[in-house]
Image (cartoon, rainbow, N blue to C red; front, side, top):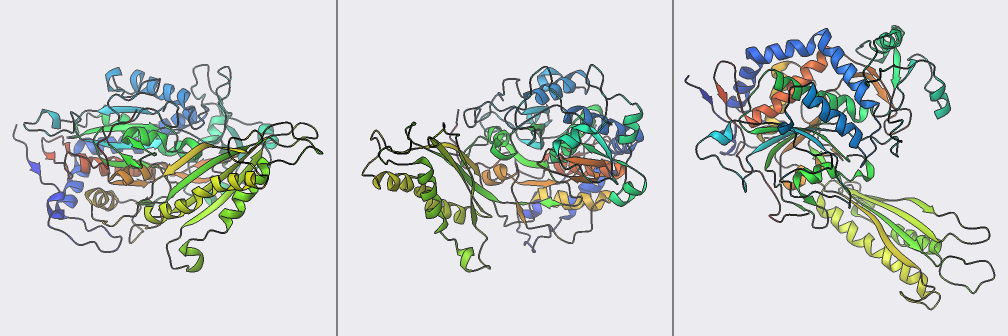
Length: 567
């Protein structure tokens, strides 16, 4: 069969289409490719299933079954294992398609361990046709890949519960009632979704209360709807289930990409997770601030937003330090004066408070800020002092230069505070009664400010919304920076975008024990899933049901900031 190759949008980009603010200039090729893909018979069948009542219900039930599995950052292994099992046993993938191991290893990744801990990503591959082409290019044997991802970790519970009780309850409350005010009130709610011994939803009367979809909160309240309390509902499992749905649909309907595509539930997006999942995937080492992209990703499509029509393309960088000051235990009133851990922390805070960024003096300057966060001291014995006090410091900036500059001013103050506290008592480091200092944890989210809004990935995102007819109210991309998984690929040089798929009528309580949501418009959700999938496939390229081929819109060798490999 003869195949018609549709030319890449990247061809026009090579001739320098100028950037106009934050509005992607979509090439005729990209527009034609999007419309051709959308009209393809197989894509329309896939869309019909996604928007069907059965398809909408499947997503809801899968969300409920996965979100109740406790999955704290860096301890996502149970949710990882359940998703892996479903990919192989139910969603059509073979064990060879699973690119992650239960122990947290990805073969070929340029980094395996982050912050001294394993990384519990779950990734599945749909191989592309590109490796079979004559002259196919690879990076050290790794052929090009496009990554679709959403994170599987949640802020709460903070600790992994025992294996005998791995789930959090899914409680129900009428939406017109006030939000619960305490954990005890939440626990006392009598209605909850029930599950069988295999962890599957029981479609009983409580399920019927929970599974009703609405366009917005007002509509839900008028219809006497219920809110669903479960941590991770919005951040980020409603989106991650949509990512997994896209993988399942692509496999079921036999969509063949040109470049390989990976669908990943990533670990450690929240808080001290330190973006570990993405750092593993992109081989990003925070000690050097560089990434090797050893797996050769050429584009990144992410879902971690709850705002329909959102598009996050700039990424707020941050450095976070957790410093512990310690003194020799046993000091009591009346003892000879000696350095104090708490006093050392106080000195550090005072010194840091005297530091200023340009934004402090000129609000038109880039907003580089910092915060001295929580101070925790260990409980002392009766009549004694706390032997250890820990200080958290967080600094943030939209671009890397000012972020590095403020770090260079703040970081030395930790050591100086210890030295000043010891010197006040005629001591120096190493003396018996001297205060000591230890870096307990360091967090790095690299900053990125986009300069080109015409890259093929953003063209694809912009055009698919118009082709499918969803979320087109924005006249330009939002330039506001946010801190997300995308910080890592952006810093490595791989184009990335983050937007919304999972659709709720209302969510709230993000990052708290009372996180909740109400199911939203399922047909709009189906369109958003199609947009997500098509955005990536317009970059990776794919074969259509009539034999035509949409060619990749980016070169086969991804960007990187180092060739070094890490352990």
